[in-house]
Amino acid sequence: MKAFTLLKNKLDKNILEVVLSCTILLFLWECIALFINNEIYIPTLGQVFKSLNNLILETGFFINILMTIKRTIASILISLFVAMLIGVSGYISIAIRNFFKPINMIIQSVPMMILVVLALIWFDKDNAPYIVGVLVVFPILYENILGALSSIDKTLLEMSNIYKLDLKDKIINIYLPSIKFRLATIIVSTMSLGLKVVIAGEVYGQPDYGIGSMIQLEKVNFNTPGIFAWLIIVIIISGILEILQKLILRRTFIWKR
Image 1 (cartoon, rainbow, N blue to C red):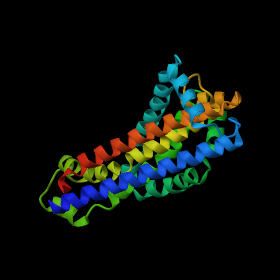
Image 2: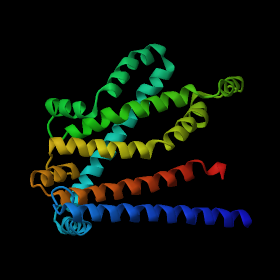
Image 3: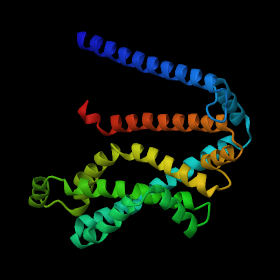
Image 4: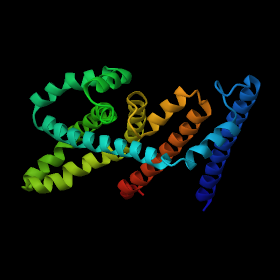
């Protein structure tokens, strides 16, 4: 009971400190905005929330959000499928692993903006965000899948051979749990990265619908409050993804509780 009370007090203190920090930052923002008195540079909080209200009332508001989320999820799923396929192949064959080492290194080394530009050259504006999302997310998932398989306890594998477990049982009881635990810790943070990358691809590619396309439109119109309004929406989506990550981790590591 005492430990629970201490934990509750600690959580309350942390929440209070976070709220205090946000309040101070918003206060400073408002002071700077009022001092500059030019919404093109820094809008006031009132102007931002007015733009946010106008965005929500627009007809295509939810379509833009759904299209961005759709591109993000599709990019993650494609990356996961390809990373799983190549990661397992690389675990089985050293030759395949060595073949993909330079490819993976090149993809990770190239700046994201260059990937966006190349994707727009090679593909149309609607497909470019998907391609960029896959190229950025794939190396992370691939390395984690390969790392999860490579870190499996060799003694456990030897025991499975001694007890003559078939391949199906090995996959279900040894390989898949190892991959699941590793992916559970990164999948949502990877999704947050994918969301940012897809939005960047939309900003440059300007497909018919998408958060990035709307941000670019606000930029062309010098509507800085509108840009900040979309930023708030992206932060909310990222916050939801973080909550999902905690739920996934709690579900995945329930045995530790």
